[in-house]
Structure formats: structure tokens, C-alpha cells
Image 1 (tube, rainbow, N blue to C red):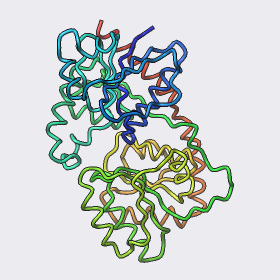
Image 2: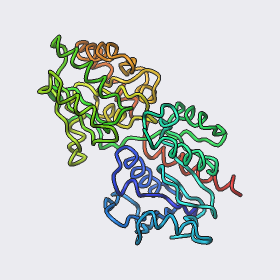
Image 3: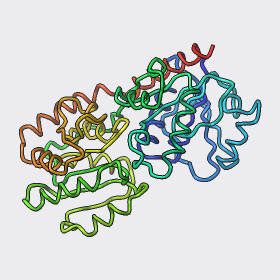
Image 4: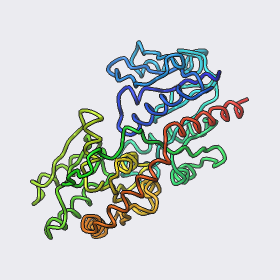
Length: 368
């Protein structure tokens, strides 16, 4: 049985989309018939206690950290103590996030969720150059790099990666996300689910909605998103909005049930992000039977397929027009929701796990 060092840390801390990806793929890998055995790398001296549910008992072992993560990184640089041997000897180590424990004694697989920092330095501010250097260095070391869409493959090529070393592994969506049982759920708001940071395009969404609200052509707006880096300017803009009473900001959902109910109750998901690696909120909304507004030429547009309402992410007027159309054209909106629901069923975590396992085997073969 192939032994995999699997960096489970983002799932333990529930880091938004990356945390969900790591959690869901990890669980699905342990449930694959004839799949790998996961030695779960989890140096979390403080916090990080949200262990994923559904892990198959005889297919994984969780290695808790006993030192701070920074100290563990130093230990992994000691000869014979790298992440391929400590805390367990493995055939391949999977870097699941933008943290890369030293793993020189085994094959390595790296997931590159996106490369927004390479496309536009303003997306990550002062950390961009450091992040760019670290990701490039480890991309060169990885035997296989996983990306969630073909558009993210283009990002990898911008960083100089050989496309032959890249496997496209789309994310999945849990059956938990589904349309409401009640046939007539009131849809009284528009929803955005994203961390509040520059590349999520919140300022333009707000300006577009203000145009719609001036004409009384859109319902209220619900934001579900924790504060990210450089969130202050948008929150100031929000507080000064002439339509402040029409905006509800929820920093985090207290449960998965709450998140699902927000998707199910929304008239549409508004997600014209400037850059995404995949766009899990779009897929989750689709699975709940909710139509979506997405940026043309982006990964979320690829996820939505032909039924997404496409807008120019750099144009406030285009976003406003897209919102007005999806609100006013009832027949199109319902038809789009049905098509999006069907498309969402093409994305499963089981399939993502199968493709990931194939990448592990390829990495070991390439290393050998």
C-alpha cells in the first residue's frame, strides 16, 4: 500500500476554501478502495483541533505536533528527519498548501491552488515577492504539481513550470450541498461568500449594487466572509454607503447547516472575483440550485459552464447589468439554476481523490 505524507494542517484550522479542499480530499482518499495510507502531518502546537469527520480508521494516522510549526520546519531540515521520514517514513509527501516542509527522501506532490500573486502583485501586497520565490522553488522540486482547473495551469506556466509535470484535478462538492426540500423557499437576498481581500472585488460589487438599489432593481446583499488582508478600505466603504441598511455582513458561518441555508435562500450568488484558482463557493451554490454571477474568462466561469451570468470583473456597469438581469429575468434564472445543478454533479470529491492518487503513483514513478 502506498504510504503518503499528507499535510492536513489547513483542514485542522479550517482555512476557508483550502481548508475544505484538504479536508474533503483527505477523507475521500481514505475511502478509496485499494487507495493509499495517509500519514497525516499535523504539527499544530496551538489550536488546530478540527479533525475531519469521515476518515476511515484503518487508512490513516494523525501525527500531532509537539512543537510550534516553525520549530518543526527546522527539525525537518535535519538529515534523516525530513518530512519524508519524520514523523513517519512515506513514499510520497503531499504539500497541500503554501507551506512546504522539507521532504527530500521521498517523492513530492504539490497542490497549487492559484497563482494570483504572480498575476497581480497587489493581490498579496508586501508578501508577494517572498511567496513567489517560495512557490517557484518548491514547484521546481515537486515531482508532480496539481492544479484545480486548466486556467490555473496557465498560472503555473507563468511561473515557469513544465506543463508535463502538471495534473489538473478539479475540486468536488459534497452531497450535503443540495437544493432545499421545500419547493417554495423565499429568495430575498443576493449572496457573496468570500474572504474580504482585494482580489475578491468587493468594492466594485458594492458600487454595482448601489446603482441597482438607486433604481430599486435588486434585493438586499448578504456577505459571508472573514476579514482578510487589506480588508479595511472596503469595510470603510461599506459603512459609508448610502444603502448601508441593505447590507448584512456575517464574518463566519457558525455551522455547515448555516452555510447551506444561506446558499439555498439566496436569489443568486454574486462572485465576480478578479482571480481564483477554482471557486468553491460557486460550485456549492450551484449544487444548492442557486444561479451565479461570475467573471468572464475566470476559473469560476469555467466551473459554472454555459449557465453562469458572465460579467466584466473590471467594469462596475457590467456587474450592475449582470445583477439586474439575473434578478429580473425569472425564466432565465430558473433555467440557469437547473442547468447549474446538473453540472455540479460532475464534480465529486471521490473523483478528485482518484485523480490525486494517480498523481501520487506518477510522482513515485518519476522519482524512481
